[in-house]
Image (cartoon, rainbow, N blue to C red):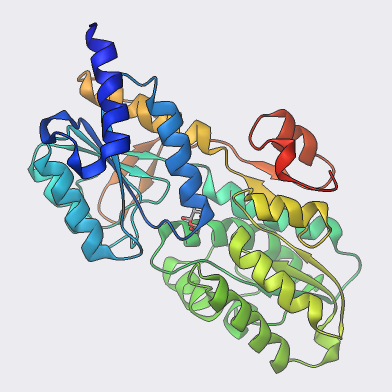
Length: 361
Ligand code: GAL
């Protein structure tokens, strides 16, 4: 049997047997934040598809929203002899200890999708262009606004996720001039309103705003926050509303809350991840847009970077991201705005999701 067939066979073995697989077999460990959000199941599935032809053995573990479990996952993978760790942190700062442990064991560390902060132990960052995700939200909402005094509601992801800052930064840099000139009125964050004249916010200023508008990446929190925001304002802050929805799960929950408010006549809401349920919402006119972050590309980038490291080489880089301790090399992947108009070509014709998953296409 050729060595490549043996390795491929061990990938299958590991993916099916999990922890029962032979310890010495695992060359690449992959740690993802949670199974409870469709986004990360997408990554697992796309990894499993891509690993069938990758030529090395790998194991995927989930941290289930728990940094302690994440650290144990990393230790388990180190004990199985991994050469490369691909890790999407649950909490950017807490994950530094896990990255440090891997580095100390001679393992190359690739931060996957979310950047691990405040450690020099990160060798590479595989990511989408997250600032562009936020910019796409801002551009979309601006394209739908007419005249002055449009009602704007901002929401953001978890403050423990560095991406939440990058998404917010991208959205803010587009929307701020339109808040300053009166096109939009921010209705759910007095902090955001107080920075109306400042395009480039410090991390601390972003943090103050995110503290008010975070969904914590949790749909239940998102729904309750939208409901509380709607209860707190009068009908003049409703009518036609523009909502910065930070991810598809949260956006659907908030869309439902805005849709049932009797004073909300029309709403525009953004999202990201091209989740199947949100593509259906877009078809049904219940969510306005999503951002396709083609996870197939991200997975291929992660695998290519892992192979480079295993071969003793350095992966391609086009820029660096500062993680609070060092500049981490990266080659961010572009994103695609998806609306009803381009949904068929962007999602179906590209093979991202098959047409049979949807009704009313
Ligand atoms: C972000 C990720 C998004 C979204 C969100 C919630 O870090 O980039 O795609 O899934 O987490 O899990």
